[in-house]
Length: 335
Image (tube, rainbow, N blue to C red; front, side):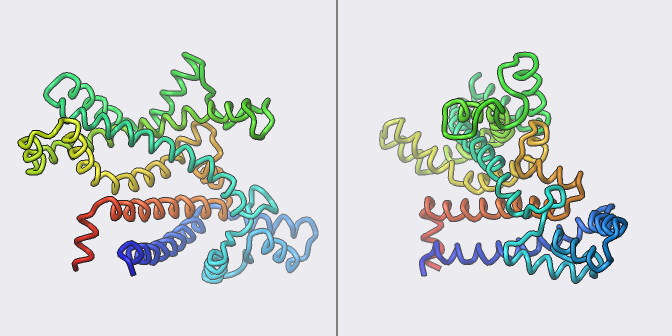
């Protein structure tokens, strides 16, 4: 069994346990939220003339378990359904499985988060290298200050500032929604252009909120690498500055791949606020809607899917780090 296969198996096992733990915690937290839509639905059906047995069966079909069952029975039914990828039915969308609602919403979270993360990562590491090399000049100071300022501003504040500037003061971008209703859905220039136009502000918000962390981390990592012996040896041997620059960037960027996974997790969590501000129907928007509608299945499913996305991002980052860093491979293969 190769190193990557062993690490993947270990990560998958730990990830599965983490998902079960998160599902358990979220189930009990959600079921202790004030208000019981199942009991309300049951009482309404009884008031309409339905027998208690028929009303209970109707609610079971709608929610996936009986409202009068014990908490342990409800938990057992929930976990059994979860193992079969059955998250129950949505309360706010009667007759619609929660999994279908989440699947439809996931693309509106995953694509902007990935685009914003990759954009901030690329810009941050490039400018971070220059900030470190030019750290004694005005350019380095300006880049470091820009990173510090953006790193300290909360995501929702950035989102509101962008809305005020580019949707109100200079109305060149739409403030909410995913697409203009005037365009017919499909693979056509108008629809795709409208999708891209509506995605600009959310993507830029994600990118700006992560940019500060990348440039500061890359600058710190490059400064550390500049003092390593192999850089001094390369300069003494008279290597071209461009080759030395690649050495510096390649070695300094390695620790940031672990941060990449953490950044994805933070941005997925931040999607709750950003999607609400931009009225973007992703997982964060669904989570807030589920809370407002007391849609237990939707709340638990959205929270669980965000958690699963964070776990997968961490696994991918760790495996990628293993592939690109020969020191990790040699160290574990030799042990």
